[in-house]
Image (tube, rainbow, N blue to C red; front, side, top):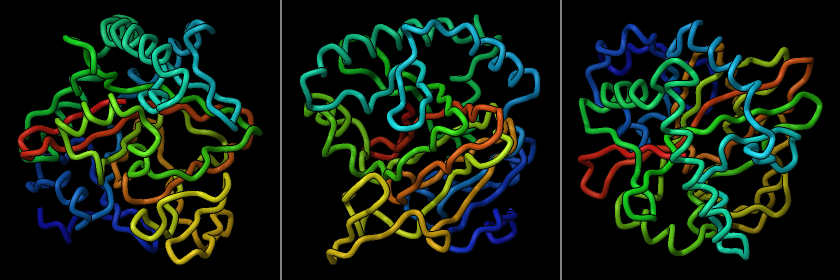
Length: 294
């Protein structure tokens, strides 16, 4: 299928393609490279997870031990397990590194058993199809023989806000040098992609918002909601005309240029949590492998 013939999500300022999970073979293009090189900005895959898989995840989230939940700053929600972006250059690095790889080992070995399907295999098959059969693997960890997490679960609660604006090209400025050096020797850290699957759709809000500003024009924030542009002016992320909102249905997956595009999650309203499973991906230095991690 020619790129221009693939349906698109109805937003103004970015090109987000939309494909049904059972129509992937028709794409016949390396769509992940096209996102990485910004010929397009992302892809939505509808019905990536089945209703039974969604039901299984919802049921098992209820049994996550409290001590395994990692609080998300500012929204009253939690991550499970801890994510790689907690491996920062601060006094908690060694503690968080130990916890990360301990929980990664448990999570990866027990996910299929607890959730009744293999999320790592499903994602590998999907991303291989979207990259013309590139090899897809979970990124190796810092510790010998270890692996990064393939995904993490994110739960946002209603009435507690969303996710503050961020873009992932800034991560190498915050992460510990040991981690940055390890990843930089394997893959293209800049322009990495972000992906997530909608598991529990809130009654209102909780959209992924792609902001009308990119890392090349603004590489840091002035406050939680204000992004400082290269010319010294401030980009206000609360203004509606600066937003491109995307609401996924349960089971849908989106992968987009989260390294380049500043993005956020809108406030959640109603009685239902916003639950997603997601992570990150990018190509190896020689483009032969697509790595995923979270």
